[in-house]
Image 1: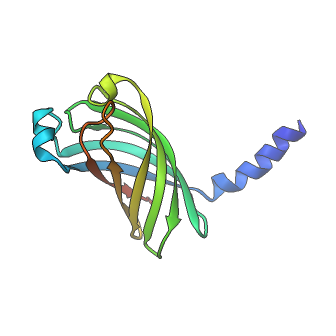
Image 2 (image 1 turned 90 degrees about the vertical axis):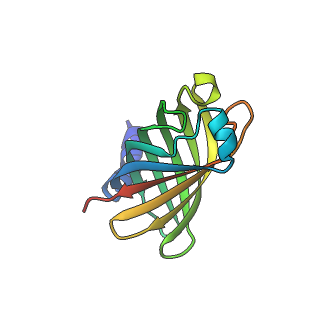
Length: 154
């Protein structure tokens, strides 16, 4: 009983001080376009939606994302993960995410986990996000940058 009360006391401030945003997935840039075309993974328009739960801090922000989008291979990709952003400046964020991804396009359609570098630029009610998905031979054959927005309703 004491452990449950202690856990609740520690978690309540995180929930009351957290932000919930809507991820609007959008675009990708394949660094090796010719290879992307050859592998039929050259779709640059990646529409989709997701949700972001952010716990802001003074030096670091912590967040959790879940969503779905149409990926570079024109398949539906499902993702969920957590990340930390370092507040490099008032607007710039640098961080790393641990993402669980499932799509027919990657890893022969098997669900996998990947640590990915992330960058963000904060505006008042929007965050511009970028992720680098490096070439990893058995998982992703093409170096790719992904871009999306997070809308923060007031």
